Length: 505
Image (cartoon, rainbow, N blue to C red; front, side, top):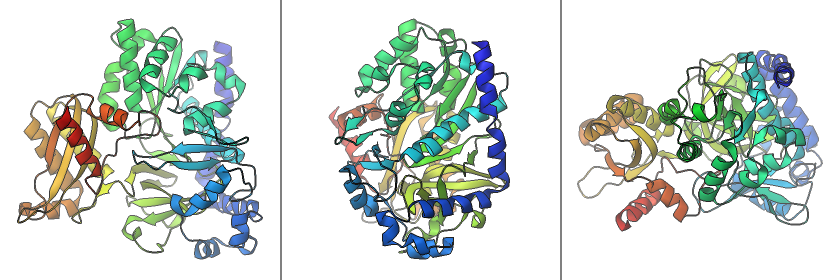
């Protein structure tokens, strides 16, 4: 296995030269992809509608095609779901990634073309390994297996030719045969729907494997880890899998989980690698082992634009190109892809932490924020405040959500939080004060509203019983996969729903 590991590591590192090229010539690479996408789709129904043949410049493209979202593309996608082809993209679309993004009732079906599978998602997965092998040339990852926490939905058949499932399920179903040899558990377990049974089966199936890497969302990885330790009676995961060396994560901020992972995997050599992979595309990879920033991947068949958050509510907001962005400003990402998404706003917000090369961090969602009083609190603000409060009170957070308390009579408004702790703070009131103080430090608008409690009062925080969010997701039939607890909401739908459930229990 050592020889095989050396060969794989050498093959993976060959890609580094190409990555360095797009880091050096980012604008040229993006220009090439723009023209390639437009040329490829000129004879599709969408391409004919907007006369792609006559589009010669990016400026013409931006002037002609309005910014899209799922609702505007939904009529086209529904036809594709019924088997119609050459609508948004020329090659046959047979796969759709089912995504909810949050616990909202509406599901999104994102078209996944053969090109987006090969040139984007799979390429991103290989690049992740290439970057890891380059940063850790003495790795032994390929001497064992990768434990992959797959999606919560089996691949389902829509009609004779079309299938859908969670992105991870779609990817697993399309992996080459050789990749299956290096993955655990087998597909029948990895794609199980029932997450409670699935965790038991995954633990039982993997405890005797030589697991060298784990990939998955932190919340469900911790659930699985605890199940593994319960079954084996071991104190930490290294006693079960002594050769474990890499954890790949994404989808949620890792900061609140870091301390728990240090306890589960007590090793200074453990490598944590963040990726930014969504149903719509693979966007970023943490390319430095001493920084949590992610390199924006520019040669995956995606053309990028960025809308400043202050313009997000405009009827036709101006989108900036890569060469026009600034450091440390919040942007909504707009993508055009080799899966047929055109000027599509995916709903995520990012900041650029470096412009040479282009590196980013995820700051939240365009719709997941609290701005009931002009305070514009985004997820990045919340995560910083919670991390500081945890650090100063010895707490560890499992899950949380927050929303507004609206003005009532002469009373000021405020924010109401429901927080479930893995480890309780040693002083709950101090936790709230530190969180509030940090929010004021990182967000001037929040600070202004908090002045003498004139517009915003001190946050109201509920210390939720164990498994509150798990039980809520379960009651909504939203366990696992793409379903996540909505961190921030600009209305009280989630807060009131969870509080009602807490009262009933």
